[in-house]
Length: 230
Image (cartoon, rainbow, N blue to C red; front, side, top):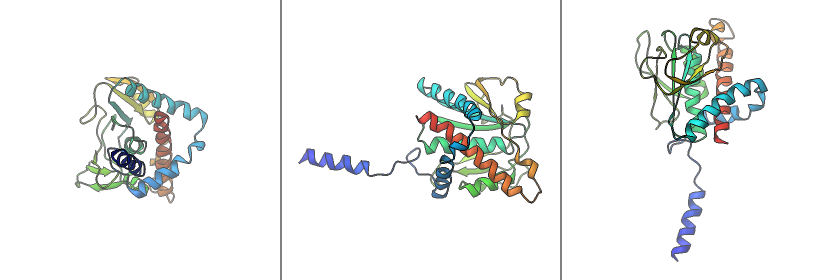
């Protein structure tokens, strides 16, 4: 009888859907968006995959050595691409159930988290709340209702809460890549530039361009963590 009850319990566990990260599900809209991007890995060129795999190798190596992975995504103003990358890396780790990954963002200068980038993330399914109305407001960004929020605001790459030692520095714009040939305290520096959606600000295609850049960054960072999962 005891053996039979144990078999039933094991079967019941196998029927429970896999939880995304930290024993919580991703928001359904966000999960649907992620699933769609994961079907688009074939759109990533071989040259681009080679760059992305440098990052996945770094993450895998850090995890294999028992280290907590800290990734800091850096662009010029910590306004668009670095925030998009920080949040998509956070969501990608959650999607693939990869623990011990912390993600951050910063700039060579501080400005503000651009509301157009915020809007693109909302359309993708992130749950975002603006916390204040200052010139550089804090946004609380969640991947699910019960998740701990990511506190997002513009800051220099070496300002709190960003790590200053033993982290991977991912340069997501060519200008920051040139301005910071070395990043103090970084264990690894990887250049992974994305085109700036700022070029579309005020144009009729503004929303389209921001959505395309958001989708590209999501697709590529999901690919990175899919390689880590393998």
